[in-house]
Length: 215
Image (tube, rainbow, N blue to C red; front, top):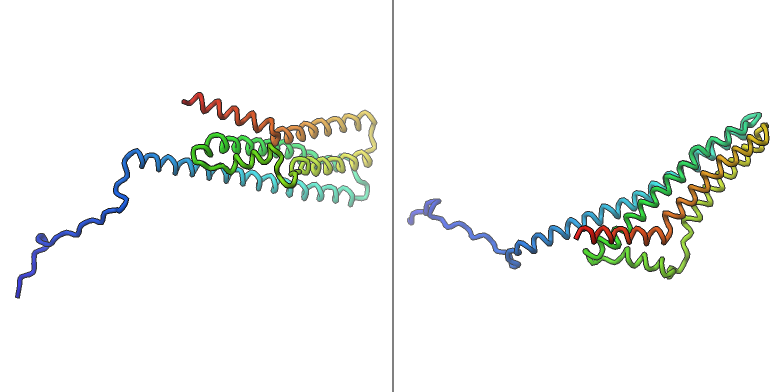
């Protein structure tokens, strides 16, 4: 009976070799760089989505609170004008918040378009930008007018109800109208600016200038 070989005498199995071989160090670095860029692209795209979701949630909350306050003001026996002004303390700051979120979205989108997409050879944001710039969309988007119009309508209803149910001096009512309408107009202007093509082009130019400075 033949003796069994000792463990030390047994041949160790040869490691399997990849058919691709070992990547050169520069290719490995390039792959890691591309993965990092893709991860950054994904994070920023998710931030844009989160901003849109946040704006929608703010609108739903504002509409609910405004309707509840108006309903309460109309339900009491002697409606008080100042009660109907309460929703404006939420609506107007919310408009400025929405303008800030839209501005952030525009800044991110232009960074994706002029910085990341050329490196990743992705053209989604660039194609979308050209569709809007060349007005090639089959249906004109009414996002900014819709948001501005809805918030403006809610604010107008609150203001009218306050004026109709507030027995005070005319000069007080005039001051109230000014205090409400001026911030409202500034907020609507901020929203229009955040979504305008002029601001998009200005941010794209700023990102490109920064890219040149880093070379």
